[in-house]
View (spheres, one colour):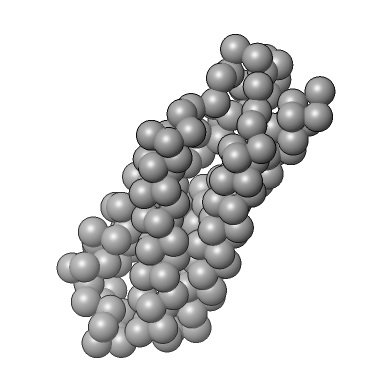
Length: 151
């Protein structure tokens, strides 16, 4: 069973994740343009939005509990598990990119070439691709939740 409070929460968090993805895409675009100071600023906003989501998720789990997946159709559960896997990739790649960026010091506005920068770029692109996948799969999960609430 899906409650109205749960639907409101997940709809709100979809908007938060949409904002995080939008700032992440902007950050990637700024990095390709060579504007590393603004790139770092956009990515920090994206990270804060993801952090906000994680905090609210813990609070939601404490207050509303977790969804009762035993009432969900198998296809919706599989979609949710795929979504959760993509989220994990996004978080791990994002943490790696952030850790590498701290050593690159983008606040100076200079890109420091080398293996660390290349790895940062790879992790950042992976995190961004996974963030887009997270948003798309979250959309499918949310649609399934609305269908469940209707039935």
